[in-house]
Length: 105
Image 1 (cartoon, helix red, strand yellow):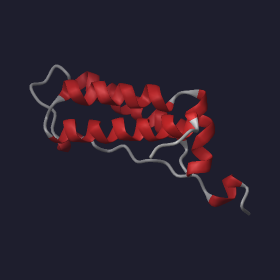
Image 2: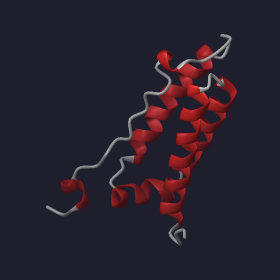
Image 3: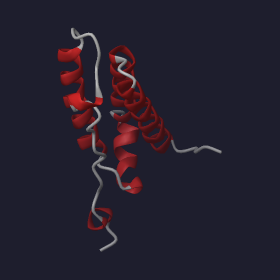
Image 4: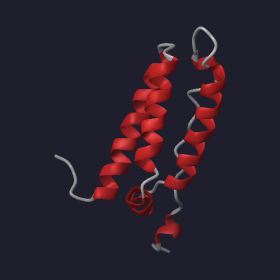
């Protein structure tokens, strides 16, 4: 399995890293959370990923921005002993593109 399209691969790997970040947040691991959020942001911010986003129905630019916002919160919370889901760190919605954005009418 897999894809030969570099953009699609970057998007999928970015989403996997974002999912791993959620697991670390749920377990109260701010280091793992921050590391995976940064990895997700870096993978999704590639020109190939941004270009592949509309085909996959994901507004990748907006997702990268939202991950960046979460990283600001995580960095502020890094001085605390633990990160909990109640801190709002799990809230990163994946912005979808509208069908009309894809040229399907």
